[in-house]
Figure 1 (cartoon, rainbow, N blue to C red):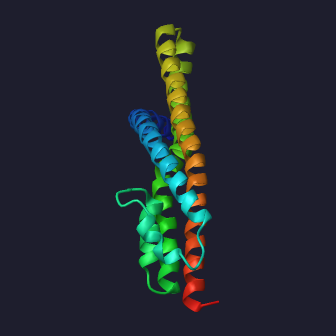
Figure 2 (cartoon, rainbow, N blue to C red):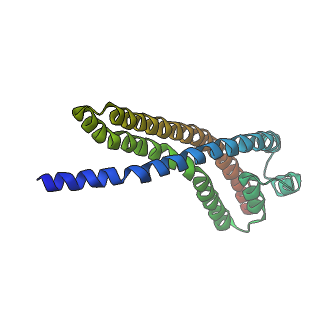
Figure 3 (cartoon, rainbow, N blue to C red):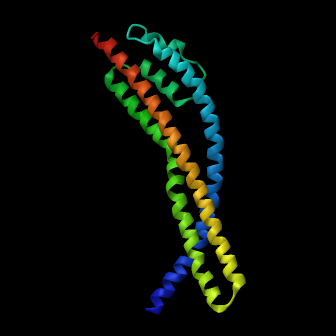
Length: 199
């Protein structure tokens, strides 16, 4: 039994360095995500104002000319797919483009989801792994070792929760953005289908 416990202890202790490295990576990725999120927010505000004005007056008679009124140099996902939707031939191709948009949106949400789920897991692992050596230090009277291990435990928890918070918040906001964009694309696709069928 002691051998099994020792093996588990060695495995858990050996995981501390990879956990800390991953937490540092996720912390850096969370900072990059904040910067990218702010840039995306500014672009989406401009695009939403323009699209909202165009879509309010859109009907099946003028939907074909929407492509001419869309901004020529706009890298946002919704404008790109709206242009492709307007050029698509047939309802099946339009349905496929809508599905592709969902996949693209999900791809953009992936890093936020990863941070939101992996941050607390790694933070908890980084908390529990040093607790073993900290308790050993406490039992042997090595207060310096115990204090160092407790410092590592608390630091990993904080970093993990910070990365998770950034991932959760950005993920929630981006989901709302993409839901609105998907609604707009479905509206345009429906108008195109009505125009094609003449109903």
